[in-house]
Length: 601
Image (cartoon, rainbow, N blue to C red; front, top):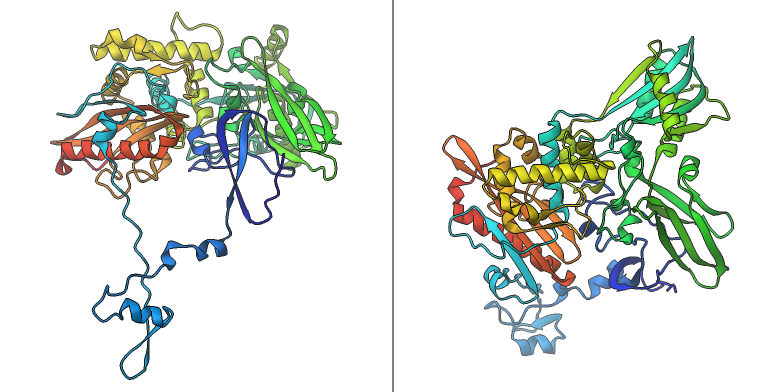
């Protein structure tokens, strides 16, 4: 059911943990959550207490009073006790005058200066208590610091988004910091006409996104301008989209990713032709039905509509998967209020955005006054026959080839780790798998990336003398959304210990959030001795709150990077407490190293 928020002017939504029906307010604009860097696809932890999202969870309204009402009950309005200062009137005199003034000798009224009661100083986090006595918080700690406490080193924890540290590290090692995704536009030119355009893409995830220095927010416009500069004023024939790697064509969700994450922007996955984080707007109206923002999406991923006009607003979305966990589409069920039907918008992940990509390419051409046929179509070459025909066209020597590249992998790693971008992490792991020379790498791009990641992690563990720990690191995908991912503190520590010795480490270090400054650590450890020095990566799934990173230590003319791992398992109510505990523990570790020894990096 819906409730009218008449006494309030601000409404926030919070989720409960019990499964049930979806509560919907008609006319609400629903979208992806925004992380600290403006990216709509960041960690699920950054979704908490933000916009409503589609799912099977119950929702309740939390009313936030107006500013005027809030001021009336503000603690700052209370008065201080009489007698705080020597010249203050007595409490009795203050009470006799109604608290507004006191009467001094001679009958003159002297105004009373009201002093706000100081807010209580927050109690410091008892690090030792949480480590040794807290019954509802399980902590695993490992650090290369003398006398540092080691705890639950062999216990498996859900790593969540600290997985991205390993994903980007493996990619930087295998592909190199200068690696770039590449897209090619191939066509036959006759005068000012471009015929039989074929766009070949290898999974560039940056098209039409703007994230740190890694996005290509005007890629479609850049393509249209490039054709225009070649003298093209008209295109004929279809635009054919050809994946450089057919293993990218089917988008498969890894085991352990719940359905609720499959219908969120932060759960969107990369494919061959990516466009705007592969998350599109869908609209539903009881009369006009269910529509995507682009007809190109509907041709490849149809939304099944099963709604009726009713007295209550009650809607829910089902995720449609194949037995192999490939996203097929969505089914919308429920009813609308018959008296006031309105358009409701969702942001939903798209399994294959090739059609959307092609339609936006046509729109960019039109915007640059390039004539496009009224019956222009987009063809996605997916079958073997279609792929051979498209490849044969591209290989013709008389055709023009235009190339477009993404930012380099160093920049992509920063755009992945600082805001904790799940979509970029997925694309990067798949890129690793597709270019792997491993005999164990086979299947789709996700499976190949997973196999290569496990192989490289095993190599780092062996180099650290901990080869036997390879079974303590299990990753089914590269973003950290799967609750089936698992890592022990000692295994994660062994890998972190090896990374500073790799040639790519400067790029990895630069990609990590800086304490108190940016990314997911912007609001943590500020105004402490580790601000701007420590770099790390957070990870959050409900009940799992993780932090790993490095404390830079000056060792003569060089800098040593001291790794730390703090993994926890608890209830959602302890989220903030655990994060404060982790921050305090990192500061204590830095104090153990010594303020003078910390390096400014």
